Length: 283
View 1: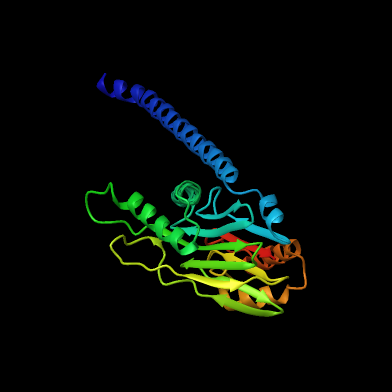
View 2: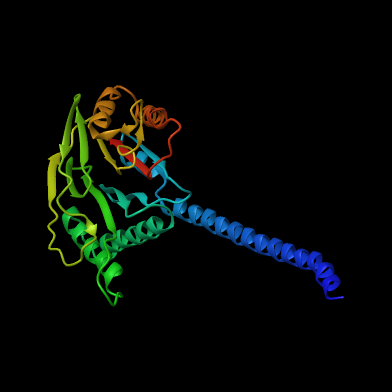
């Protein structure tokens, strides 16, 4: 009798286990779908926060933004603000990509607006200095132990369209100017925003004149760090500079197409390693 009871109970036990497994799989699938829906909606919010391309076209003779997140949402961002005839624009590369990077860049975007609009600070180096303090406080003030190494590499420009004067401050990202076929690289700066809060940092504005048909470029490191090509190497900044100089006879819309095509060809079948953001404007 005991043997019969064991044999008859085994199929019933297996059926219950299968049903429980199916329920767990279904629950997991629902959670994954909910997560994907949330990330997709976060992507919509992030796109809404990013400035409309028309703002750049209204401020400059020509402009483009090549923006290609690694995931649905990005740790890279570009930014624009105009007050009368003074234009501010920036490219930022936040720690990581995906959700963590997106949260950091949304915070930076908000702080930038506050610093200029509410605090009335207009010098790029002073703006970056205040942004560094805000982001360092955000990362570290509520921590009970140690400090975080999160932060932002960013370049910020201020152009006065009346006086034809430009100011640039680098916080870990350079600015390229191509004038009459020659490429000039403005220093990226020694310090980035956030990261080690206890480190003494200095941010400096670089001043220059604006000339007709000057082309300026700011970019995150996603483009130049992409692996690909025949020998599976990084694209690197040298190739990037050569590429920019080679397409100067084209409109900036055409330049964006060339940059996108070159990136895709270089990447080939390899995975995109990071978010990509390249901003170009022409005076």
